Amino acid sequence: MEKWCMKNRLTLFIKVFAAPFIVIFLSLQSYAQNHAQNEAFFKELINVERSTVLLNNQSQLVPVKEIRDLNIASINIGSAYSAVFDSLLNKYTMVTSIQSTDYKNMQSFNDLNEDLKFFNLIIIQVTDQSLQDPRTIPFLLDLQRNKNLIVCLSGDVHSLKLLEALNSPLIWTETKSPVAAHYLAQLIFGGTAAVSALKHDVSPKYKFGAGYTTKSIRIKYTVPEEVGINTAELKGIDDIAAEAIREKAAPGAVVMVLIDGKVIYNKAYGTRTYTDTVPTRITDIFDLASVTKISATTIAVMRLFEQEKLKLDTVVGAYIPKARSTDKVNISVREVMLHQAGFIPFIPFYRNLSNTDYSRDSSAAYPTKVADNYYIRKDYFKTVMWPQMLNSALANRGKYVYSDLSMYFMKEMVERQSGKHLEKYVMDEFYKPLGMNKAGFNPRLRFPKEAIIPTEDDQLFRKTLLEGYVHDQGAAMVGGVSGHAGLFASSNDLAILFQMLLNRGRYGDMQYFKPETVDMFTVRQSSVSRRGLGFDRWDPESAKGYPSRLASEETYGHTGYTGTCVWVDPKYNLVYIFLSNRVNPGVSAKLIELNIRGRIQDVIYEAIRK
Image 1 (spheres, rainbow, N blue to C red):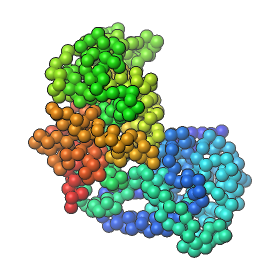
Image 2 (cartoon, rainbow, N blue to C red):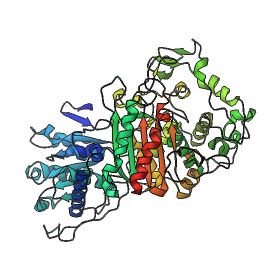
Image 3 (cartoon, rainbow, N blue to C red):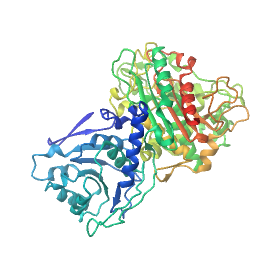
Image 4 (cartoon, rainbow, N blue to C red):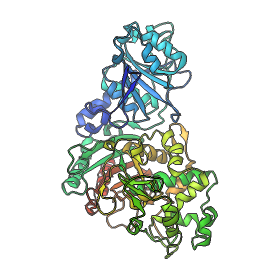
């Protein structure tokens, strides 16, 4: 965790990448172990939902909808389950956690209040006991005068009498348990819904029948039993993941499964590397490789297409002036997105570097960071790489030839038509408003390397273990941001993004795409291949079944060279995510040879069909 001291009085732990996992409800990993425990959890969850009441929600602050510009603090005043609560909050957006015990020697909470001046949404957990502290209620009433405030109260219903003067949203539950904390945190962001009302009069303000209802607007974190799957039916995932590690197909992996908008499985396996004893965590950040194509570049194209700034049947030359003097001038955007432009698959740019093209120290002449202690000279992309692509050979135009060059070209078009660098455009338009806390290019600028899974020990090009620097050589040489590779993310980030696409553009009560746009880009759009526009798809000609022998013909997604994939199957309302670093310490084909990703997906379908 990252330590942050404010005014020498406060030590805050910001739960961005290292949520505690000592309680099973934090990670949901243990849900995949015991059917009886999961059934007990789900039963209690239903009881908590039926007895929890949302009050004072006249402003409709709950569920919180627009989160892009929020700076949120979660304050615990007396709850024993704040770790569970805060961990769930951080699955929806970045939330700073504060324990009021840091202020136990103060006569009032004035110092705490002062330290909250830069937060614009405060979430506070209180209990019936902590309301007896004479500092608590004045603190709440003071905050509601100046801040957006949400109060979660656990304990005796009669303690509501003490909050008659509170006008901010108040969520009350009688239950004090990890399950209740799990439910309350999700209710705030719309992973769960408020459905109940007070069952009798408590005070003049809080009377029988009082209570607001809400709807679910974001993904929910739960157990397989909620969607009718016995946890034991998913044990095959453990077995296949263990096989992958045993056979050295990858040192570690994370598997995530969503059905009907609910995360029913999220588990980490193995270690960061074969020589590292640190276990892989579900919060870890992975190099997505070619999953970048659909998680960054394609969604940017979709947004610009809807804005009529980028048209599929307009030619490349209309958007890229330098292409007008080349044979790329009359290739349509549609051909590029379908990998039918005739581009060669890739260019090994790094093999042509001379000693004067790079430096081990940064300077004005060598500003582009490729890895630790490796910098490319200024304008190398502009003067060397881009001309090579523009003047590269064209062959087999109209036929399907998968090419990384296609997304180099699309990045240039996206940036020209949006007026923003690709990494900023997707961050502003998608990742921030969706709550994708860790998604982005060049993660070392925002996170310590311990939060990022290492990829290759690159002794050929960069002479170092790659920790937070993109594995793909070409993407590295352009500063880590490319249309075909460079994006890093956690499994939770991808769950949010692809649930939005499965919802046909809607998430968090916001419409990111028109449904018809999602439909058009994700269905088969080629007469010569299985491809959609940017998206890979189910392959009817695959002998083993691609991406899975049980996937429906509606399935779309993509794989990544580093050992990643994400697949969406609308027929089963399914999102499947697999993240690994199969290229560590060096590139291995075993993950593919053993069909690890596809076989795990098969297990999921078999569980759904039972």
